[in-house]
Length: 192
Image (cartoon, rainbow, N blue to C red):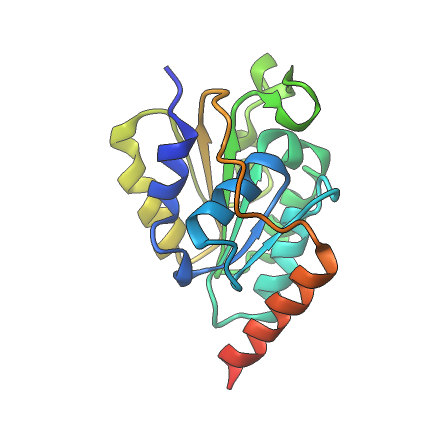
């Protein structure tokens, strides 16, 4: 049975202050916002399906001394899966990717995504050249996922299989302009 995302994602992220975070649409954005209280180190996307990994890659390259976490869903990653190839080619050592896979497009009515039809995003990440990957399907695998996201010396990709239980729907600003300003100001404060 797939994991409950409301337990698995917070367990994998741990202390959110350890990361600069980019969250994709829907569930992952709400989950990270609920963990961080919509904190300054989180840029949550709204209306930019497929952009989370590209933005996270750029952030990891621009902030090489900070650990960057991209949290995305299976549907959102499938929209721009070619970015995995660019990540694999560039291999930023500070980039961690957490893909929360419920096998559905949660934002558009829970239609089945390709992952529920056999597409394996971990294998795609391996094929793109990402060397540290794993799929989590059981509670006893979470600790290894935490270590991989935090301690990998190269780009890491953790796929967590979850049920279709909804993520929390509170504490999230989808005002892109305000989020950009807040996130940038936090980066500048941290650089001082």
